[in-house]
Image 1 (tube, rainbow, N blue to C red):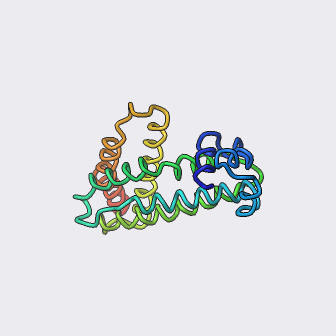
Image 2 (image 1 turned 90 degrees about the horizontal axis):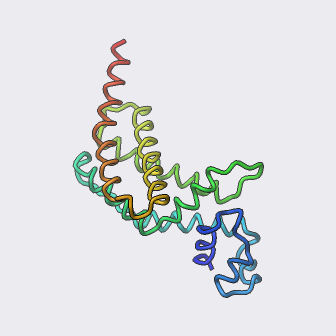
Image 3 (image 1 turned 180 degrees about the vertical axis):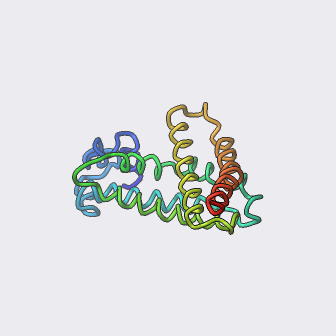
Length: 192
C-alpha cells in the first residue's frame, strides 16, 4: 500500500494524489487504505516517514579521519539518494508549497531535515573542532542545500548528471574550502 502511495505521490505530487489512485495502483479497495489512514494527508505523512527511515538506513557515513572521509561521504550520500530518492523527491515538493493548512508530511520532512542537519553538523565539528557553533551551522546548512541542488539537477537532467562525481566534489568543497573560508572569516571577525 505504501509502495503504491509512494509511486503515485512521486508521479503526481501531493495535490494530484488521491486515495482512489493509490487504491487502484495497490489493487486494494479504498476501504483497506482508509482502515490504515484517516485521509490522504496521513497516508502521505506515512510515505515521507518511511522514505526517511529508508534513506537513513541506506546512508552509512564513514567514521575514519574527518577530512579524509569527504570523498567517502559524497559517495555514500549519492548512493543513498539513488537507492531511496523518495524522501527528497516528495519532501522537497511539500516543503516548497505554501498553503494555509500545511500537510503533516511537510512537518515530518522538515523534522527529518533537522535530524540530518544535526548529523552533518557532527561531521563538520569532527573535521574542524575550532569552528564556532555558528560556523558549524553555516557549513552544515550549506552542505544540505548543495545536496538539494545536486538532487534537483539529477531529477531534471537524469543520467546526464554524474551524481556520484558531483556529490564527491560537493563533499570535498564542504570539508575543504568551505571550512577554510568560514575559519578565515571567523579569525578576521575576531581580529576586528
